[in-house]
Structures are given as C-alpha cells and as structure tokens.
Length: 315
Image (tube, rainbow, N blue to C red; front, side):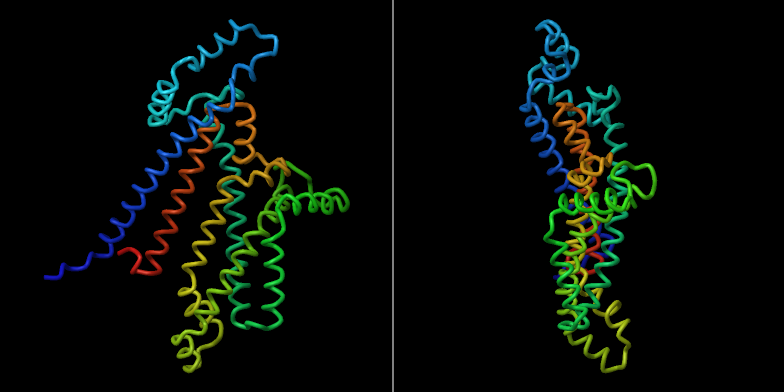
C-alpha cells in the first residue's frame, strides 16, 4: 500500500525542522572552535594593562575576568551565559558585549539590505534582457561590464572612488555615517562585485529557460515579450539565481571588512577586526555568533524559497 503524500504544511514543517537542526549543529561547532582559537591570540592582561604593570596587577586582572580558570571551566561558564543571553562585558568598551555587537550589526545589516536590494533588482533586469537578446549589443556590453565588476578588487575600487569623488571632485565625504551622502560610496563599492556575478548567473539561467518548450508555446500564442521574460521564464530560472544572491548577501552580512575599514563605517566587520587586535574575547565571540545566526536564518529563508519555487525540493 502506497502511503499518502505529505500535505504542503507537513512537508514544509519537516523541511524547516531538518534545516534548523543542521544549522544548530553548525552553530554549536562554530562556538566551540571560535572560543578555543580566540584564546590562542595572547594574554589580554598584556594588552590592557600598562607595559610597566607588575605581575601582581596582571594576576588580579586575570582573576577578575575569570582568565585564571581552566579552559574547560571558562568554556562551560561561557556556554551557560550564552544560553541565557549573557555574552559578558566588553573589556575595551566596558559595556555588554552583545549590546556593542548589535549596535554595529545594525549598521552592517542596513548596508547589506540596501545594497542587495539594489543589486538583485538591477542584476535580474539586466541579465534577463541580455539573455533575451543573446549575442546582441546590449548582451555584449552588459557581459563586459559584469565581468569587469566581478573581477576588480573591492579595496581598489574604494580607494579610487575616494580619490576621485572625495578628494578631487569633493562631491562625497570620505568616511563616517553623518548623512545620506556618507552611504553613497560604501553602497556603490559593495554593489559592483555582486552585480557582476549575479548578472552572469541570471543571463546563463535565462538563456536556458527562454529556449524551453513552454516559452516557444507562449510566443506562438502571441504573448508579449515582457510577460515571457519576467513571468514565464524568470520564475523557472530563479533557483540558481537565489543561490547566488544568498551567497552574496551572506558575504555582506559577514561584514564587508575591507570596505567598512576604508570608509570608517561602524559595522560588525570592522568591530570584529578591532576586537581581535584588542583581544576583546567577549565581543569577538558575540560578533561571530550573532553573524553566524543571521547567516543561518538567511540560508533557511533561501531553502524555503527553493521549496516554494520547486515543490520537489521539500520532499
């Protein structure tokens, strides 16, 4: 007797539960790895205390912050605190580590959301139009621009942009977040690489979709070009596009470290680098875990989008 197929809700619930368990296991593994590796960077007492600090002062500092306890005891205490939402206090800023991280993560999140919204919209339109007229002038021009954009390093684009638009033309500020003008250069620099990559993926996927039988049938019935491109073909070409968009968004959520550093943008990437150099362990761990959790949630949303676009995936 063949068992009845799962309902849509049941299949989706099973799909989400499986992905959530896999993400939780990865998060636990990341917590263990980062905690012990961060302890290999050096003694925080040597960084925070003056050079002439006595051995007694250093011992008191380690005792105050629990650094004298065995490593496993420190780890067990830390896991217990994290479960209750307590990530400890930043040694450098004398504030709760989670508060410091969420403050910086908000800046990075806004930067990523704005950038990826612009990138996804522009890349899907350009890639789809290029595929519709494959081999034409627009296709060749968009392919050239996207290949250059995907190949040029972010740090070089950022430096050139500052020299041209901030130093020579004095149109835009070099760094900071004081006004909307401060966002233009970071967003523009972060826009270029993912735009170039996604345009190529959209073009390749759409060429295959536009040559399919259902598109030929729609054309034979007299359906206009717009609905053929953006309704019939695009939905069936979106699976690989969603994969790449998610990957590029994850790289931005993970902290556009170079761009944030060059433009003095107070995001989580810059905070993470500063905290590693300062051996601010609590902030480092909080930043990594918050970022990892955000990436896992985003990957779960991408998996759900797969399942909605292709019902075979959720089974």
